[in-house]
Length: 392
Ligand SMILES: Cc1ncc(COP(=O)(O)O)c(C=O)c1O
Image (tube, rainbow, N blue to C red; front, side, top):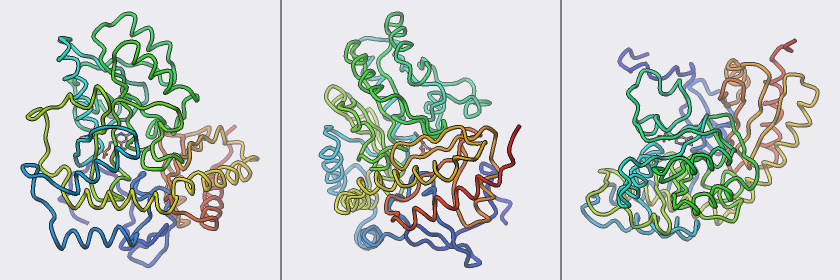
């Protein structure tokens, strides 16, 4: 073990050397079922042939040129994202936090262009938007913020899934320019809002000339059973941020814009050395094509129904179960106690999952998962959750 790594992570004592489809293998040849996808990243599973081939071919021809020159794959990817989302223009970065930074900068620019000198963005309690200074300031989790004060100003916090509190902000604060919200709160514990929430937010934003900015970094790219989670409702956001599954593991982030948000950023306002390079963009084009060609959006929805039904069935007599929440293959199983040790219980049984918000077992399995593998996943998850003692 190296002593030269900054202790930012408390990594588990396992290291994987190979992956194929929904499975991973460690150095000792042990096999693990991947119920987490590296936190919503490897949605096509590991070593997906078309993605591997795209990376190999592009690496053999051109990896990087810089945004000083036009990049054909970047244009193709922007076209594809706009075609799939009904939106207009895209800026590319390298991560989720960067995509959200672009959105936050865009909102401030939008406000300043209207002479709002102290532009504010409405954000949610229990949200997660990243670890850079602006995105951790937007995040609704004190643990993420503690020690990094002074935080970036300009965020107004309200409860999630509560439109009345946003209407109250609209009535009292004339400096608000945007709402930044996750369609389903991921790190917050797979919290699925009431249906109609995004539509109500859209109306409030329209009435106040605010931008509706959706953080689809965890929910996007078919995981929810639609290509983008906002497509469960009949709305289009002004800004949508993407990362994670867009490159199936090759780092890429995108800030997608629509209508009045599309022309806010002008030359000189924003930039990135690596953002939108040919390797990442070609990979992401291949990811999107693979999802569409193989109907993986539908598969995600179908397998999610199967998984949730099996989990409900298998856990119905478990007194520790509070609730199973899901939107497509974003699945949260809330228990009545803190359960971080279930992560190692799962590992011991050849299963990767994660616990978020202390009490929520989070499953984000690959979208390529088949019926048999889904049943295997359900069996293992039920077995792991049943290791918890009953709490009285
Ligand atoms: C909703 C959401 N936004 C932003 C981020 C930050 O993404 P990244 O870690 O790529 O910066 C995450 C990561 O978990 C996320 O789930």
